Amino acid sequence: MENNKLIGYLLIVLLLITYYTYFVPDYEPDQTNNSENEEFDTNNPEVDDVFITEQKKSVDKTNDNFIYNENQKDIIVENENIILTFSNKGAYIKKVILKDHSSIKTNQLDLINDNSSIINYKLFQKNNLIDFNELIFSSKIEKKEDSTIVSFYIESKNGEKIYLKYKLPFKGYVIENKITFSNYKTELDKLNLFWSNNVIHHEKNYEYEKSVTTINYYDINNQYDYLTASSKEIIEKNLTIPLKWISTKQQYFSSAIISKNNFNNSFLKTIYNSDTSYVKSSIIETEIPINNNSSDFLFYFGPNKLEILKSISDGFDKNVYLGWWGVSSFNKYIIVPIFNLLEEIVGNYGIIIFIMVILIRVIITPFTYKSHISMAKMKILNPEINNIKEKHSGDMKKSQVEIMQLYQKTGVNPLSGCLPLLFQLPILISVFYFLPNAVELRQKSFLWAEDLSSYDSILNLPFSIPLYGDHVSLFTLLMTVSTLLMNSANSQMQTIQGPMKTMQYIFPFMFLFIFNSFSSGLTYYYFLSNLVSYGQIYLFRRFVDEEKIKKELDFNRKQNLNKKKSSFKLRLEEAMKANQEAKKNNKKNNS
Image 1 (tube, rainbow, N blue to C red):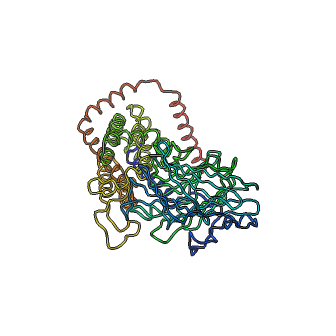
Image 2: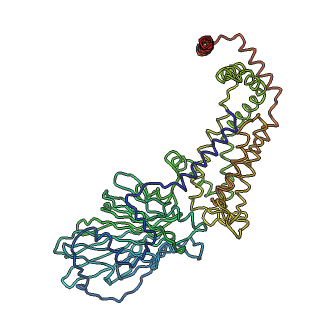
């Protein structure tokens, strides 16, 4: 098989991956609201009561029955990684700052704040409804061992008590939450959590950030799913299957709730937001089980880093998308461990990517060299192959059989050129998913690229070119030029005719458009990979002795001249003779 055909197939595969990743809706939504003019307002009581309305229960609020000992205030605590702001009105987390990260607009990263997010608990008690956001709790902060405990407490006039206790460890992004109900004489129906969130814009590429922001969830059958991320419509789902966790997943960060006893009857909704201050709006409403008059669950506010997420809950690492099943496994068990190992040794991520390219190319060098030798043999045999094709120009089957006979006589395996591709393909596809989703590259600079997680721009255009954008990415240009050079070097090793000769130049040009807004870490990797491949081709060419290869082919001809024909070959020749006889008989009958 011609090497350039394989390159063409590789490019087609990557094009398909790009298309299905970024332009095709992932799943059909269960319910879709086509009203694009619907505004999302976290203070809108109609939105707030969506799930309650669906319960079709008549309830009376009993919030005036409580005793208030404090005025409304905020409580701020922190650990090594995050700063949390609580409100004693509602006893909820109203603001989260990630200390080790910054936004594209500000020096700090507000994952949620009081302008974007509202978390509310609602307790259903027969015909009564207690809305926590209308209650002002007494509060207390205390240190226990290596954790900070933020406690909230309120008591009703008839002695019923509600306790909320948040536990923040000295390090990490997980907050434990326990809600306890005491002295309740009537049966507690259920506890609902309502979370509305205008997802704050943090990244350089706003459109891409929007296209990957959605709600992910994981059920008790260990099945991962999500709301369609690419749709511009309102997407919503009612789920009756219990869930282990629900996450509002952004490009590099997640805000999530993780259950200890499963969440029930969940309602999830995402709204495409036209306000560029926000990426999307999300609504999560779910039932938290009450066992022995208490409910336990966790919050996660942090980066989508595989090493962190995989230790939190079953399937929680799915918030880092590493590709479909086979590619995801290759990334998880090969690419990511190599990357993490190099991260411990080398501090510069541009150099880490460079070392990854060198390591991978060294590993597959024996196969690449074998492929190069195979290409050299094919080049020597090309004149004979062309003569066979001209000789049997009207009979493709016969020419193919004779060409295969030529391969057998000379000991050439036309498929040996596929070996490097078989090893490179999973690697190229794996890094296509891993590098753009690696939070480690976020806002890390290298050479002229200010942020390896986003595109590198050496020129901002005063206008936008369709399918290209309003900037020029230098790494994408270098990747395109290096691909053309590599294809040109490969074509010198073989005679290419027909459409493939043109396609080897068209595909790199298409990549110039497709990859212009991609992660510069990815285009940098592909550029280096092409560059190393080109260097290998140059070195191999210096060591390949064509005269020696010709002698080897001639020797193989002599060795196979009197060699007994295999049973397969004999059957093939008999089939060819039968086919020719059938054609002669048809001509006689027609005449």
